[in-house]
View 1 (cartoon, one colour):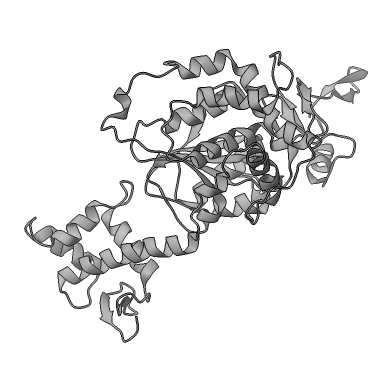
View 2: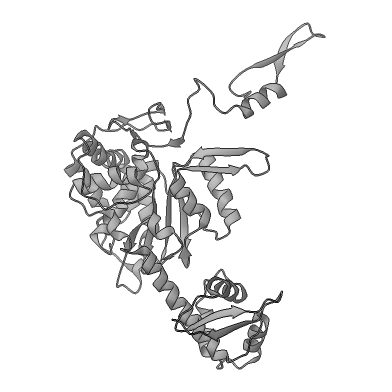
Length: 428
């Protein structure tokens, strides 16, 4: 408050008004106020022009009252261009990425358009997963290209935590800071999280500020992205994510040569104003054309994003980014878990033990020759690198307890330290 206004108090000894900090009563009144009439609300800070709901573009710099975004830029931007010219420019910089299918390239374009057109639609935004079948295939470069165009800098990255508490803190900090994106780098194993799933479909985020007895209720304008290799999307995340997948047959993708732009990021940086306008021109042209309705499959929870971002790409003749979703995400998820549960049952059956604690199981493995119990040892070796074998098995047993597969299920007794066993049942 003292940074934007001058507060004074009367000093009787000096006989004049002197500079002072805001009084406690004023501070308490401001912090308790539900709204601030006539004071504009800023939803975030961006470093590129912003597309508005009516299809016009706020070039900045400064605050744009129509979108609520503050544009922090000093660049000069060219006028909007026809979609054909825009796609030619964007296709040129995406030329050398080994897309798994055309729809995955379309998904990458959707991520870029989402970042520059976030002010042109209301409602929720899906997450974008940059997946690959090998490391060093170009997933990180994809995200760097996208943020270099939209923000003028390489992507800032975060570590993906499976702790609900850590994730909650990160999401709160991101929403308060007004960042336009959040990237989880090099996710290992599975991707799906209660707080993250909730944030993606609620449109608002409510939490208590760390160290302060104060709650915040904020709009969610952040675009969530993640990179990784062969990531397994779990929980309710499959219906909230668009995948941009790269695939290669090369044993060492990092040794690949023959790129059109050996320094792709340098080329993007040098041509950023033109590329930003190219990304903006596609949805702007679609809105100017009256946003003609496209025959799109429903995408529940993300209707307005779908109408604009998917709509403009399909209208321009590009594949629907939603084609990267599993056709039946629930069935795919169940099938993945069936395979995992079947592997766990095979490993447990190999032990041929009566009901026993996990401590007994790991003691048995540690005291036995390395060649004994190969199935269980192989199962444990395939666990995520950040999970101990004890935590890994304990989680799976609790998760799958009582689930019947191949006429068997895991159960335990009711002791404080339970003894687990695999029992035969009549059903399938």
